[in-house]
Image (tube, rainbow, N blue to C red; front, side, top):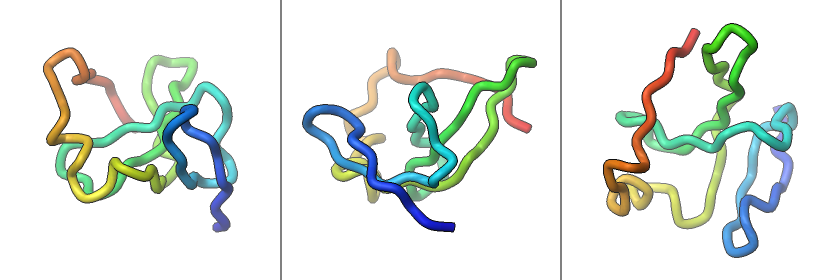
Length: 77
């Protein structure tokens, strides 16, 4: 699977799976060593599309800067 270069924000750069689309979520899951791309499904679950590289969010940096407002629970299949 190839990776596509995507602009994450105006100040952050990343790589994601080619099936990623605008509106998909970049998520750092507790216990996961890299960010992942998630897509919400019509039945309220989220689907894992694959791993992502997001500059500045690898090796635990995202969790170090986390506050309670940044945590969201969801159901995965």
